[in-house]
Length: 376
Image 1 (cartoon, rainbow, N blue to C red):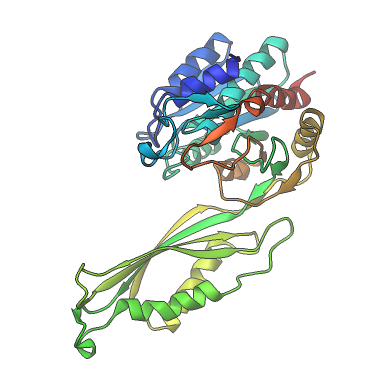
Image 2 (image 1 turned 60 degrees about the vertical axis):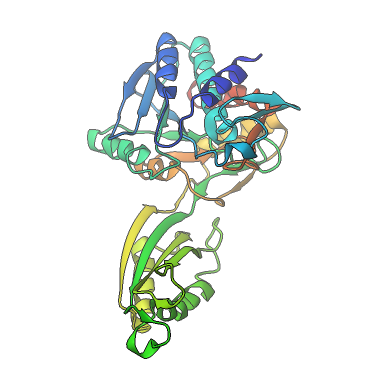
């Protein structure tokens, strides 16, 4: 069994459902300390954050990952227990296999090998791990980035191990992400009997025209290197449980994924204008998950592209699609940031898996990136 497969299995066996780390970071910290890394826990609340670094000063290359995973869902739906790592037909199965304990294990192996081969390397190489990426993402990398900014610590290059590949390892390189903005809308009505609507005010009926306008709107036609912005309603909840009662309020959850043509404040003002124009009585709570970012052509993109061509035999598609990641908190520090990792076809699904052959190629890929950026 390869070292990266063994370590990935050890991590999967720890049921670190967000924000629980389940001992993953402590195990990694002990291992990297033996390799000469300085390991620091930068914890906030119940969230574990590990910063492990090697070297002094110079340019800082950070590998960024998370040890938490999403809940497995019904265990009986899995072909094997989600926290019992299982290899069959060339794949490693288990919650977190692709998202992203395989990449975390590969980071650890790559860092050990890099410092062993380059003990006097220039600059600083580091690993940043959190247990709050799959959850609220409040006390994880967001807080660590704020801490770094306040203490004058910097990151020049950041490689995130999110599962970014589409069909085969290395066919896609994320060079940015859209911003994310969520809203919780409560429309207030007047509860009453359905037979006497004139004595009530139905918040569902009132909300629907405004929501129809927001969902039908084409927010933009895209932005250079970014897809079009989107507005999606994820939940509507109302009612008392009885079919003869007009509810007193209706709650709507929605989300924007937006490109740099917008700011969060601009979108918030647009939504309020629509709701006000429809005469709604409402409360609206916003959560700004992160602004869009783009890493333009530079040393990091060039280095990672060259490694992918060399080791994977393909020129990657470089784009800003997909969801979001903790990279959105590192980019504002002034860092060049990219995301490269295994195939994402089964992330968050039942029977999540990663191809063993591709997993075993990851440590050499990440090590090669470090060598291109920090070797003498």
